[in-house]
Length: 55
Image (cartoon, helix red, strand yellow):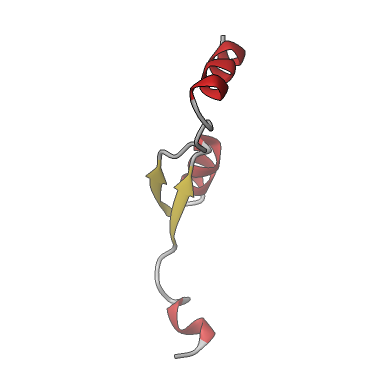
């Protein structure tokens, strides 16, 4: 199999997290599979600090 063997197929992208990226890719006509992922907070103490930042 060569590197360009799949280039004649429609583009399909996996987007992890940033919705703006997925929207821009779709605007170009490509299919997007979205993965709702966030990095782990690192425990309850860190999670509560991050929640305070979100407010």
